[in-house]
Image 1: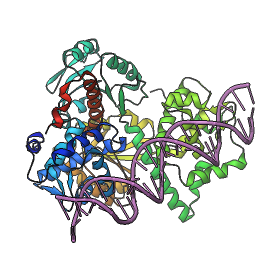
Image 2: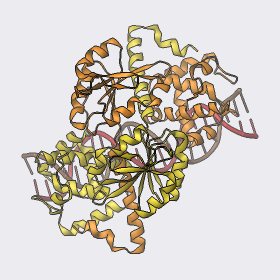
Image 3: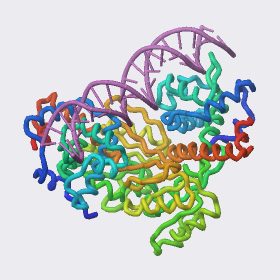
Image 4: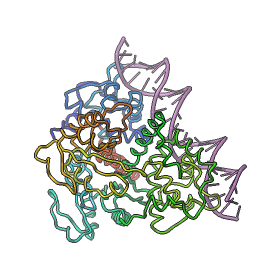
Length: 256
Length: 256
DNA sequence: CATTGTGAAGTGATTCACAGCA
DNA sequence: TGCTGTGAATCACTTCACAATG
């Protein structure tokens, strides 16, 4: 998708200010202990905003510009960036390509990550075909499904493997991230197998609570939860209106 | 599937303590202003935990039990529930079905919600076929795609409609929630149209920042961001190990 | 002199720890 | 007695506001 070259462009430093050598040590130290979790979760958004600015040939952006593109306020953006180091120039702003590279490096996108997807149903298929994977350095190393009828089926460039091959696959290429797209009932078992095979990070699409050892990270994506959160707020909006109108329907639920 | 009946089971109160009449007013009032957002986001998890307990014919659960099933600690669970009202019994715990109904009511799941999905690519297909939609009272009212070649195609019980039919569809059945599963470039435009047609809540799967009026809620689900967050932590784990081993690779990135 | 980087203040969420109650 | 409900303490995140500075 005509993505501006990430590493190359930034690696050779670009036109505007790069930080002076004597600062770089302290950057690393600051970054090494404790970027707040909330900040980490926003770095990919900043990265995307920077990428889209770079594609529009913007060379420099103020915190205000960047914050606008990322949908946050500028104070938050500056504070977030300050945890990574001092990459801006007072009175000027941030060099887009330079900052882009710095953030990509911090996130770990200057290396490739192998991903295994387990559970190739509707969602698994969609994930396997998702182009956003590859474009950010996430390679799908294998697709796995427990249904023997599905094993051997081609999806894109890959062939679906059996659950039994999991260990072999994971030992061949070192896979750090597992994606679980199975039904809820299978999720914990799949998770345990992934962890046993050395996977350290799991992205869980199954509507299930996963239990993992401390050293394993889990993030979940749960459509049904998101809809329910929206429903909650939507209901409140309706309540408010109903109250203003004196609409008796408001009490219907509470009557019980 | 085989989901325990949500409304019926709980509506007729169940064996254990229901709150006395004089309390119910204050519950409603407490709930009406200000359940913390973090709590709202966990209610669906508690609901799921309660549902699975109910399916196992568990009638009563302590905050400890429930918290375990939901993957949180018990103090947090109790505090969360306290924002909804006093639904427990000291020395005993919570009546599973009763609490389940109360949470479902608060979330707004005692009514049905119509959902429109826009963008029927890989992901849109998967969403359209997702059974978790219907099982929680979310009905897919329409599927919409801008590609004329796709309009008319059947997906499950539904036929894909054109973008032009959006207003008509939304005026026919009142749709409160729109799901955007288009490419990033189309997302803001689709979002604007949904908002103009009166949709008050949007679930955005496109990797784009959406701008909406204040009265509209947006939640986003972004696979690529989740992977990047995992990569960040994974990288740090590797760093830590490398540092312990004195492995020079750690500096490779920072050298620039 | 526009804009960053950041202490300090403010806000919100989590955890503690125990009084209150069935 | 056992477990809830909740103030008070703590921790995490956000926002303010301005001194530092290229």
